[in-house]
Length: 151
Image (cartoon, rainbow, N blue to C red; front, side):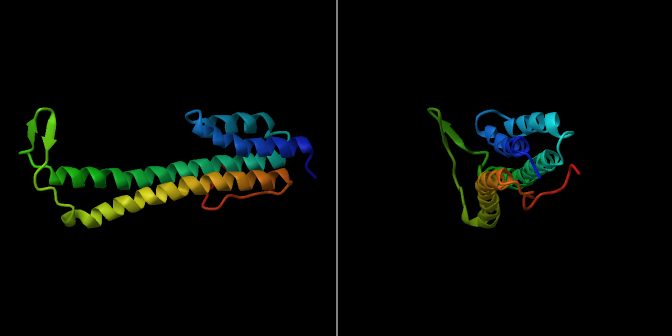
């Protein structure tokens, strides 16, 4: 049976990932700090600390892969359609022959990657809240789509 202190610590480990919206890399720094201070004293806190860090690292990996798909596609699409004859007049760039129809497939893939990224961020927010509620009730929660980096 977990004590109230263990439940609260584990819940705060989950909620501390929301600091990413205020502090860069707060979703890694604060959970690591909370987890390392209590991981040796409680298996419950240790389990949840590992789950939080594995989930955040998995999301980082998914985001990097989506970025590696979306950014080059947009750059290739734009630079393929910008001719070297772009005319610069009075600080205005005029692009001739910009044809989206020839690159609609690549643009669709890039837009889908951005859409999936947005869905991941929304799902992350709600999964963190859900995990916090489950943890405060004393349940062992395991995030979906998580790669177990830390065992």
